[in-house]
Amino acid sequence: MEPEEIDDHLTSGYWQIEPERPKTRRACAAVLARLPEEIADRIIYSHEVLLFAPGGSLGQCLPYSLYGQMIPKQMNVVVNGSPQSHSYEMPHFKFCLVYLAEELEKEEYPVIVAVVAHEVAHGILREVFGDECERQADLQIIEWGFEAELQALRDANPHHRY
Image (cartoon, rainbow, N blue to C red; front, side, top):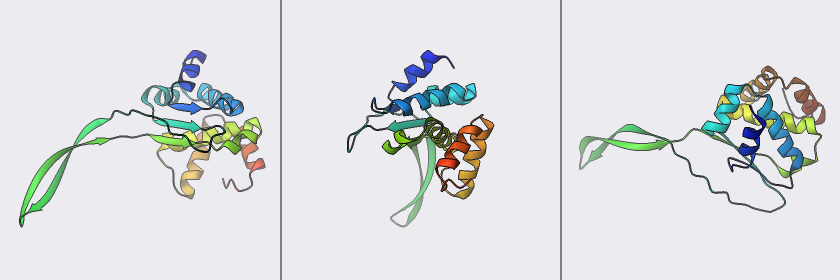
């Protein structure tokens, strides 16, 4: 992944990182640079993982336009006591939204990198709930080469379970 592509993505709006978050921005750039190219491409060009790291405001609204494949769905309904079948086109979007809390900026840089990589792993794996998903996300970032950062996260946060 070229540094220019990463910089463009960090200012594209798909990864919205406020200027008050320089360590978070640097960590996000590092994660994108170190991911396997096919994973980084899925994030940058397919927008499978959107990321939001707000600054000092109490709230913020971001506009997103998402275009998805229209999928035909068959629906069986009963009209006046008579079963009928109807086809509908329904939009289907597949992406994950990652929120990075403002408090993350206070952590050591390797911890921030681990958190970003871990949350991106959830989005790429499409697994976000439960203990097994947490374990899988950690295993994924180890496979991607973030083992030292994961250990820093575990050292800093004893509640990080895996």
